[in-house]
Image 1 (cartoon, rainbow, N blue to C red):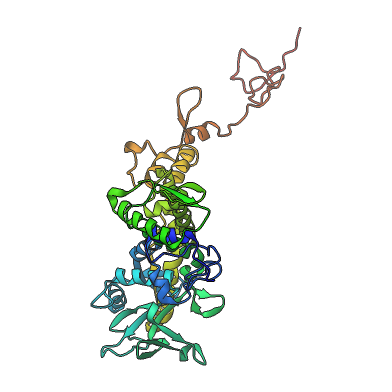
Image 2: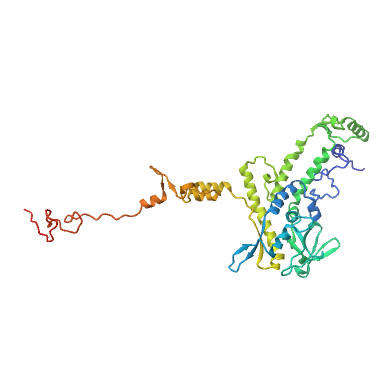
Length: 457
């Protein structure tokens, strides 16, 4: 006798439609096609599937990283013999900056960099093709620059390692190019250091859970008419009763006007069940998966516009942390790769650098100013930190100390504390300190050159 499909599955199939989305884990001993024992549907093992995950929270998290990275200002410097460097703002070398600002006829420099950082996040690799004047590949050489820079869709590129790295090839479609014609960047995979490791592949379980919840939720409520109460029987219905129940459901519980009507199942002991979205707890589950996905990208919820229980201080701290842990490392690696592949080959004395995008910690700066003013900083020095002019009349040039009396400057305190000559101790024989013996001196005639002794009576 063929085993009959459990009633609960038949009921769910009627409610959700014929194309029932499999549960997160197998139920009733049934394993669905493409579903492993653990309920896993997608491992995001290949690059096309990884890029397909660029939706929802992943898209928001990636945008919070890629857009600030692409907006960082780049500058060109020339190294001096003394080890210092100076910014290059004119001359033939500025062709490098013109190439980075306008790499091709399709993308601006910022758009190309945004694609670069997106590919690095999602598939772990990026391929910027250096094109020569004739459209062929360009191999970097001293004093020569490519005519254009084209970024290839990293999820369609195949990298093949040669006997040495410089003999490796990059293929897209039917075309194959030498790897030396690319500015190739990657997040090294510990299992294969010559290939990239994507954040998507590393967080596959979390992403798969999120996608299954969205698909289940969409399929479950697509009809818009579901019973608010179900009576579940402990005995299976025969075919006639099941057909009659199915017709009743189609007649009385289909369409938005019939939503939330009670549904009665006859036969045997009946147990009522409430069916609502809270039972499945989709909203809280999605918040959990959202936070885990954001943690994979090292992005705070405030960075994607989720400001629940977030004040301005926390939001500013989120921007600061994002710049430190996400933006700076990615941009630094990008400019180092360009320098190593192209710029230093063109001219060893040149290098690309970037303006530090880390925002100033306003609160820490204010606390330092409040603690240091009139202690180790003058008012004018603190004003200079905020770009303000000195106080008029030089009144901000002194460190002012307030005591019991009127405030005095530090210079006055130091002047008053200067050491002075202490008076010599008075001698009984020379009370006026002039070196003369006052006992033998005639007080009535101090002009006498000779001094006579005066005896006491």
